[in-house]
Image 1 (cartoon, one colour):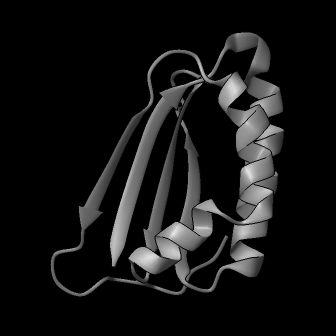
Image 2: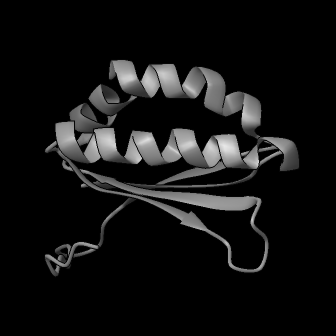
Length: 105
């Protein structure tokens, strides 16, 4: 399994549009990508313009397929224009077995 954590800030005047785009992307990923095991968007409670994506993929093929989904490509085109400054994207391999509780919000 591969985990990706992406941390970034949105432009204040683009934050709400980003939320709309990201919320739709999250729904699309969860409905269509069984090998994307987790796809969670996080928002800072201290700063409403700071976000993180937390994603886990069954394998590198699933990670690559995720980036090429038509809804992901469409969101990325507009979504990147909402970002303010640098984006910190890091990939990780999991240590040990993943812990999945099966709890869905």
